[in-house]
Length: 447
Ligand SMILES: Nc1nc2c(ncn2[C@@H]2O[C@H](COP(=O)(O)OP(=O)(O)OP(=O)(O)O)[C@@H](O)[C@H]2O)c(=O)[nH]1
Ligand SMILES: [Mg+2]
Image 1: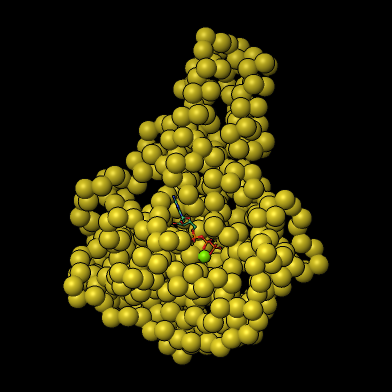
Image 2: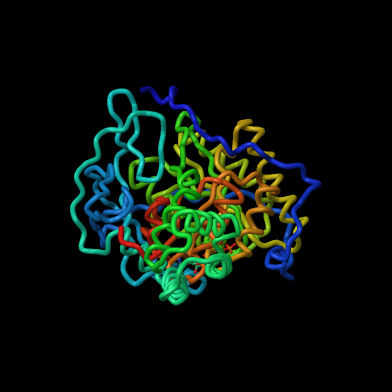
């Protein structure tokens, strides 16, 4: 199928709200800080640096997770040419963004296209074009995706299953136990709706009978899967846009820049031409951090001066990405400005100026959510959905949190697609969101 025929399949994107109805919430307190903004600047382009010939490696992240028996991705035979930041740069970056000890895995190679121009995207992305058969993956000596998910959600699931087991020790299912279970599930951040679904199903199947913790876990996993299935979607890229523009928003510290780096690694790893634009002009370190990710992933970088107009940078980046025929442009934004009004104005302006170049742009507005913030994450979706027309989510820091259940509550309430989840700080610690795996991991059940 020709690229021109690739149609986008977004269904959530264009609900940009009126500027006069921002959602109020405590979460916004976290957006406020005392720093001052400077208000002028000009754009400077920095091309990707040449690959470091001293450290060539063959990388394996392009198609997503390591082989776990079931999953194979269209990785292809991509020759690796990773780009490492200079030692000084890296040191500086680690001050605000510690890097994993092992060098990150990046693949960067030729775009895989068949005679009809169909593109092989990494796992977690999709087009309507037919994809070739995935190449067999070399088994890697690391934990499978599900094992890593289980490990990451261990605190969430052990707390939950421990409490459920304690509740259902030698007890028949009655009104009291159902009520206690409902409270317990709500406390685990799963949300009232899901808690009631679980108790409802349990009650209709087992009322008056003996029930074990395992029975409850199984029913809980099934109900959570039902809630998550509709939102577990691949990030649909319309590559006929050239570039497909992804705007990344979210509260400061939720993992925007890191997630952009991880996405860029996947995309450039499968041969797509990626440009990263540093729309967070609020902190010098933020610009530098994105530049390092661009270098690591072989992406083109566009930055500007500290305090410069972020919307102007976004506009320039879109024009440049078009001229360069980039496939995907990912724009980073600030999560924290002096006040909420300023943040709203800036994000709205970015969306507006992008729309001048293409009425459908930004084609994807991604919000990152930090799982460790629990209920706050729920409020943050409300706010950024109103400000920037968020049409997809990525939840980060699901490694090691006891509050992973919040993703279920957010899915039930907002019904926004969840494309990926972050399970660590490393470049390959971003995985496509799978409803059943996630539900089983939370419920402590095997794959
Ligand atoms: N454990 C873990 N840490 C993560 C994950 N994603 C990001 N981080 C870390 O979270 C911290 C903040 O990430 P950033 O990417 O800088 O967050 P940001 O949203 O860009 O922050 P601002 O630029 O301040 O708005 C960094 O130390 C990241 O390494 C994840 O999935 N797991
Ligand atoms: Mg950032």
